Length: 275
Image (cartoon, rainbow, N blue to C red; front, side):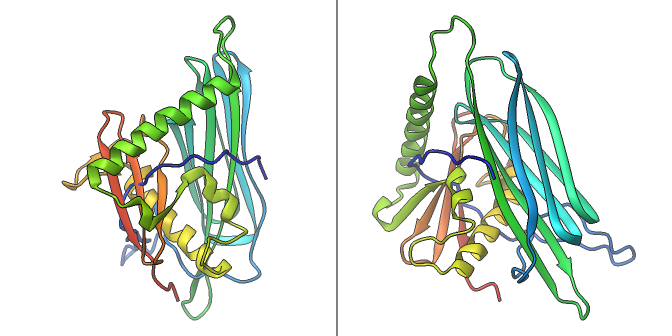
C-alpha cells in the first residue's frame, strides 16, 4: 500500500451511478465499465499498488498493478494522475478471466509539480446460479518533481495546490448554492484511506457500498468524460481533483470539480442499499 495524501477541504461533482456491464445478446462479451455488485466475502486483492518514480527532471514513471486472489470474470483498474491539483493523465485497463493487471506509462512533467496518483482496483465475479459479486480496493502515491533553480519547495507546491483547489471548490459551492453545513467534505484522494475503515455514521459494509458506487459513477461520468448538465461530454484532462460531499442525513453524496475551462461541474448520487 502506498502513502496517503493530506486532507483538502472542498466540494464535489454530481453524478448518477447508473453505469452497468452491457451484454450483447448474441455474443455475451462484457463491455468496458465498472458496476457495483455486493462485495464477495473472503475474496481479496493479494497485491494492489500505485507507484510514481522520477525518471529525470522532465519525466516520471507511473505504474499501476494489482492481483486478486483468484481469476475473475472481469478485472479492471482505473487510475488518475494529478499535477498541482489538475488531471494530467489516465490509465485504464480491463481484462476478462484473469487475476492480474499491470499498467505503466512515462509521463512528461513540464514544470515543478506536486503529483498525486489515485487508483480504483475492481473485480467482477460470476458464480453458478447467476449471482454476481464484486471486489474492490484503492491505492495511491505522490511525488514531488522540483526543477533546478526554480526556487520552489515541496511545501510551496502543496500550499499552491491547496489554495487553487479551495478557490475552485468554493466557486462551485457558490455557483450551485450548496449548503455546506449539511455535508461532510472529503477530497477524492482521501477515500483510499477509508477503504478498510468507515465513514461517520456508516458501517464498514455501508462504506464499501458507497465507495463502490462512487467509483461506478466517477468512471462513467468523469473518467470516460465529464458529463455536463446539457448531457454533452468533455474530456476530464485539466479538471480539478473532485471533492466528495457526503450528506449528513446519509441520503446522497455530491461530487464537485472544475473543467479545464473553469466551468464548475456538480454530480449527484443517491445512497441506497445495494443488496
